[in-house]
Image (cartoon, rainbow over all chains, first blue to last red; front, side):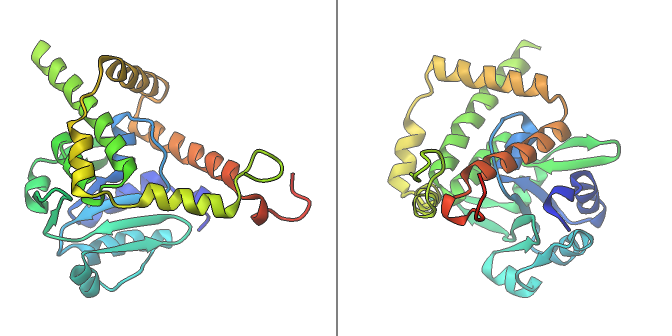
Length: 163
Length: 88
């Protein structure tokens, strides 16, 4: 499948209907929220038991897993690739660089769903949790993203208090 | 920088990528997190968000825009030594 032909709506629909508990994280989550940042990949954090369902959802798009589900669980991450690349975190708990343990179950409970198209929704971590996920890899660009997200978070808090 | 003065060499792209992908230390992260966001930085970010949301009102519009923008950026960074003979 050509990268330019990748149908995002259908891809997100397939993820939603697969039943996999999947959170869009990384820069594409920032884009969905309204922050104009560039990115090449899709990043998801999925429930540790859901990689097989997630892979089945991605299969019609020509996306091939780099690791079998069992090995992916052991290593905590894998990717789905063709001309698109989907990085997948598959771990119950991920530590931030500064020592905070972040649990998928907790983040999943606090998630926010956003409508992409009629009947198609994408699940994102709450802003506080999305900021925490940016402290997993802790690259220079993650710190830039944290500043963007913090401004967004304070603006949303201000809007809520004014309602 | 390449001889045409516009496109970076493959080596420069590789070095820049390594710099931007490196994992920071706990101390570097903590120092960055403690740096306050100034009023002007805040205003600039909110203006950018307002523009992006106005120009691309739905999440789907935004995702599509970023796919196009990334392709354009990638093309502009294509190193001279990886371009096909005779290419601009």
